Length: 132
Length: 161
Image (tube, rainbow over all chains, first blue to last red):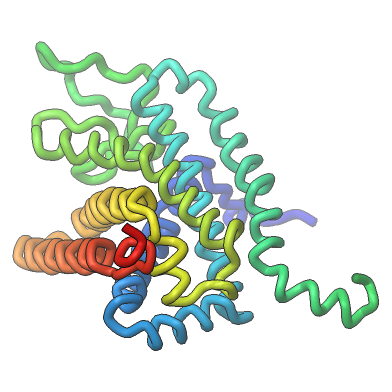
């Protein structure tokens, strides 16, 4: 199928890197606000903290943790890429490899990580289907 | 979208990068890392630029280790307030680790949001007001986090000595 030229906007890698970095950064920032307050509750109101943790361990909580983990992993890997290029200019020769490497590590570490966090979600499903 | 025009090289300035950087408003972005290029002419911005990168490397270790500990080594379903007090924080080392994480993450996160505010909020009064609120929230969170790390009683710390 021919796509009209005007609809064929293909963002450059660097633009995607920047947009995801900012998006994940702001998302992690929001969680950190929550997380420092919830840890403060361990001392101030342990029962309320236990309720918050029960949510973290629940099904929707685990979905959100997976999203948080993905944001954190991307931000960490892309941030390391930025630091390498900015502080070690000789590495700019390999900027393409660094960018692809970011995604290879992201998938390679992120998918097993997501499976571990979501284990209480998919394991009962497999058991119900008689597969585990 | 991009302008390859380089500022005229001035005497004593750093060598112009071989790959054209991108001028986005008052900010110059590195074409390859897509982060801000090392600022010139402002000592304060240069310090912020370095602090972001130094804390980034520290957080690469601290934050990813922290996330792995509380999600992969222990599962959230096994954790509660007593677990924090008696298992996670029963050693000075782990309190120190988490305090270091708290400190670096607050510096990095709030300087990061400062950059976002500088990018999007331009009227001087709004910009300064937002930054002021941001810094106050950062200091309050630092105090809250430090207080709970320093004062949460632990069986091992209170009775085991």
